[in-house]
Length: 195
Image 1 (tube, rainbow, N blue to C red):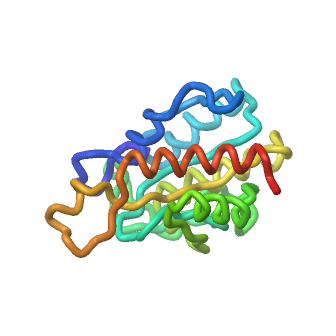
Image 2: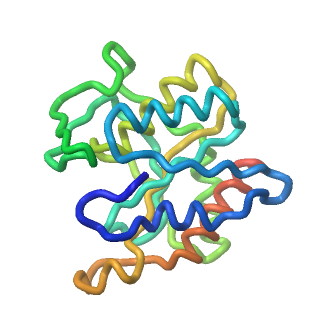
């Protein structure tokens, strides 16, 4: 996701782009999505249609969270007072009109948490991806996968602030780009080799 909320850097994008193009025989395709309702899903769905991946790990930032957060559920609602990067606010708007109320992540989230903890990376499971563009993308991807890529292992991961983002927020937790990138590698490899 591109930056939003006045932040000068995008640690999620930086960590993703620092990943290798291949990891233990797994081809890594990196994609930047605009933090814009609608456009974000369009960009992602075009990539899903052309690549037909086995694994999809969507990454965004949730400042204030103490570690990597694996989101369990995407809900069919956009509802945030903060505008997206096109200045649009949505209130009580479905992501997909007539779509199911929610979709669950199809990543092996408990196994991933165990592997992240084994790698000494703070991580938890969350039951709310919020109601902003991160959830919008998560729901849109899962809705598409339900009918077009039923074997896709997909889910959304939120990361904390980067240390330099907390210089004026000293009580906020943060995580280095290297630790985030290492965590993303663990997520990919743990998903490709579930217990």
